[in-house]
Image (cartoon, rainbow, N blue to C red; front, side, top):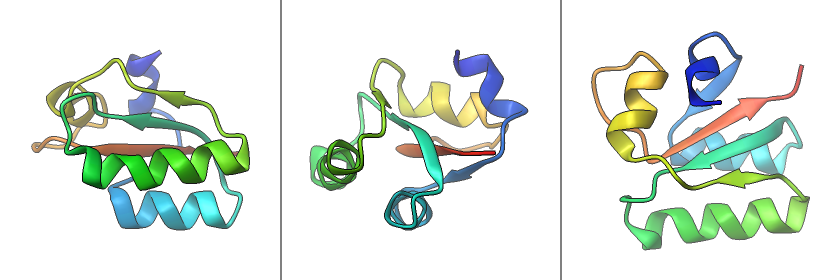
Length: 81
């Protein structure tokens, strides 16, 4: 659930998320449905290769608000505990 993002350990942004996916630290990834596909598609590809579930039903504004930041977020990766 998106409201749980505020309390979960996570990284926000494309670069940090891709690094977490590469290192096997991500357990769930949220991709904004209104973000540029040129940005989100490579992240989605990395997730499919790593077997990480991807959620795409939220907007950049909704993800940013759920992460308690003042700007939108195109990619959020929840880290494994």
